[in-house]
Length: 543
Image (cartoon, rainbow, N blue to C red; front, side):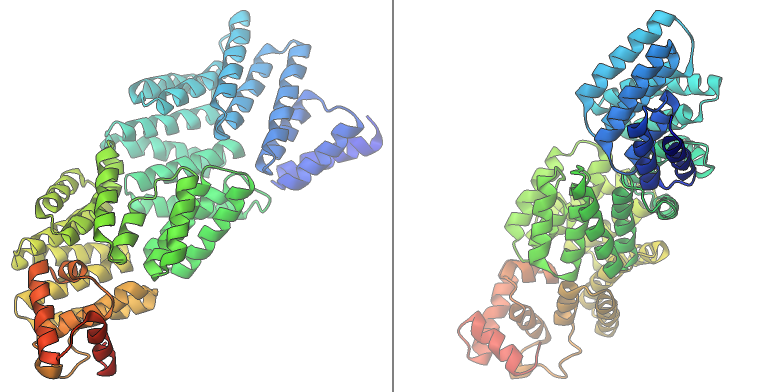
């Protein structure tokens, strides 16, 4: 090897040690052009290429390293390179190609009949395939065998991967009480830097996704912060930074930092699209959610459509958007379809709160009650319990039991405050106001609406702010034109463009009652159309 090539190789190894992946890739590639790298350095080249976002270059380097070890007669090491190659292929969604390499590597190990950690590494793709097929008991059992082999040979990468898979399998089987122990064990190795970077990044994303799937907000936030720190320490890192930004956007949205959430989602879209990663669907969905919450309906709709194009179910976000737009029939059909299709309990948990809300707006009390009861039965974590309590309060209000509803809604508000989720806390206060008003306590109702309006204004929740202000009676000192307080309330909602059905949903009234109020408004004010009523409301500063 020439002097220049040797210097490039040395610099490449140093950059790799410092986790400067792009520089390591450049130097090792230069050394390889000057003189073919030895197998060990080909492995380094493959690692740098993958972490710098050059998947095909990584695959090619792993293939070369595999062949080079075979030429040396080192079957076990060749199988290890094949296992790393399979891991890259699986992360890229190339299941068939990964399966072919897995079969090839197993045949090699069968020929040497040597007990080694590599046999465990080749069990991981089998467990993964079982998981993809929905055979979670088999996935758990096979991952358990891999973990045992990893422990026996002291292979922390193998143990970390296998325990993560076991934890995901327990979650999928509904064994929620056991799930986090295994996932926490996997994370211990990652946080201690005992796992390689490729394994660490994959486990970070997998564990955070699992925490979000089971609504373990505390762990999701904790691991997202750790992943962010890990990614920030590696500026050249590509594969996991996009997913990291999606997770970060979700947490920021929940915490009420919507501008930061929007920025993180936008950057996630850019990074994931640059590699045509399926996770781009999740990024577009998250971007759409922030737009919807801000009342930016057109970009929200486009975001949900992009999410769908990339394979991400756009519900419940799109159905909630339609509800906010007053398209109750469209929202109802969409959420019914999504709930009917969802079989996994955790997937249903993501849909049921929206189902309760939309069925309530549609006036389908039995469907809203059934969804709330199902959510209550599943709730086993603080986040889920807050959702369930919130939903129960909505249904009780719909059923006309305002006193019971008020108790549940106040409990929900406390839960959202404890979890530091300001948007949901503000939405509950609007419902508390409606319950208080039905019970005759108008002063408390106005105070709750005022507090909710302030919170929505701070967040930038334009549509929710408009609704809360329309529900408030404080803005007008006395009813205009002889209108009653309820008629004034209905008029203000008419002026926001809402249909009778939407107004009925907002006020927990029947459409027939709303129609009667509107007829009275027209008679008292001498009007003949909704457009005239809207103009009257604005001219008299009622909105």
